Image 1 (cartoon, one colour):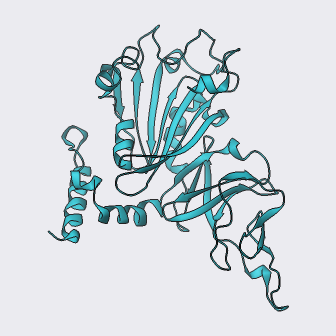
Image 2 (image 1 turned 135 degrees about the vertical axis):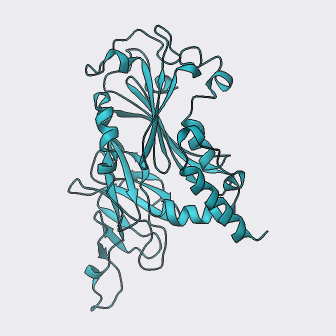
Image 3 (image 1 turned 90 degrees about the vertical axis):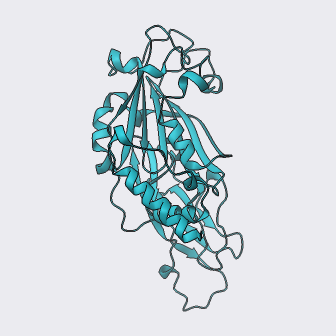
Length: 327
């Protein structure tokens, strides 16, 4: 069978499944996890056009703070400019296509290309280009800018200039969980790694509690059993479920430290909230802590995972280091 025929069947199967009710839904076709053709479509039509989570806003606390990452096929810089505006821009020099920055850090004044020292300010505008002719107009050169939004403290970037705004799509989700005050959470731990699985498998695994009684039988299941998982209706922009907790049992809070977030109800203090923001940001919130992953394909058999742990201010018990609490 030709590859294009394979991909046609995969897409038609996914579309047919999406049209079913929850009670009649079926699994994703196996070929969807190994098809190179589908991966190309995902990169072109999902990761180049949808909102991808790139971290938390408090990672960019001061002007010049930056990090670099790939979004789909595109290298991107996320930084806070001198005016305090958080920006996303291309990480490719406009001269000879060299990579401008690596990793993360804090810039003192601007971005200097390591190849020919073209220099850009923190807004992405070219301000220096040695040995160019007198009539060269630096003002006409600027690093391409991308759409950026902040939702509940998470930073999202969209490469599509015609992207639909993110926050209006998540209004219902924001309202439902407003008591958690996730926008106030502080970064405790952050890592970026390559894991050996297809990105969709990891996203799907995160958003179901059916496996808890088997895969987590001695850790999560005793406190949050599979039978207390409750899938809820989300929509095109997000999906969600809530995981009940047996009173008095916990797998993560090792002390009796009082809850600092006074807005949480008793019910909210004793359940886990899990949601997935399309296409690949998955989040678990338990009382005053959140564990989250932002997933991007790294080939069909691997996924690039940006993940972190964040906590409500003041919720770490005295005498416990941030590292130990994150673990």
